[in-house]
Length: 182
Image (tube, rainbow, N blue to C red; front, top):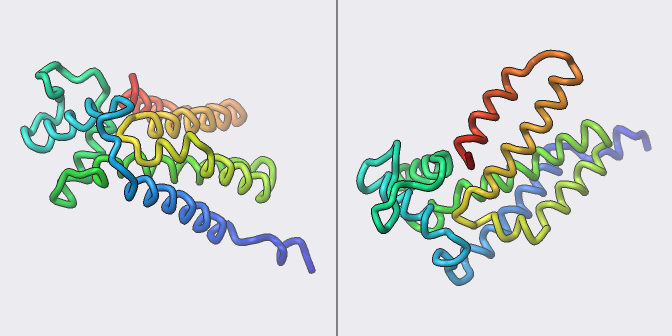
């Protein structure tokens, strides 16, 4: 058997990681709601204010105070809520789920590129099965999205530094990271 024949297809491994993250997300969504815990009520209020009151630039919380968070997570959750025609735990946490999945795939891709497919897959699987991923996959907070932007920033900085050029993508993702958690 050649090395190529024994190497699993990256698409299959990525799909498996997606199923792991999806399973965690469904477990969290079908469990008891925790929207009043872990500081999620502020982000929930910001989404409500954006969708119901049209305050897409500067949102307010339940008490009328101006947002204490940058708007990227609010915009993503609000877009999901508008697209699906409802605001619920699913639409509120969808950006967190996608960020968790994307981070697992980024870990897989970076690990595969630098250390081989097995290291990349095991690293991504370890992250996807970790306590932090299991918690933030359905948390209405910016943590997972911020983690994703920071990891992508680090990889883009490494790539640009290594090549000696190509900092544009770094700065664009830095702007997104700032809009996530300034």
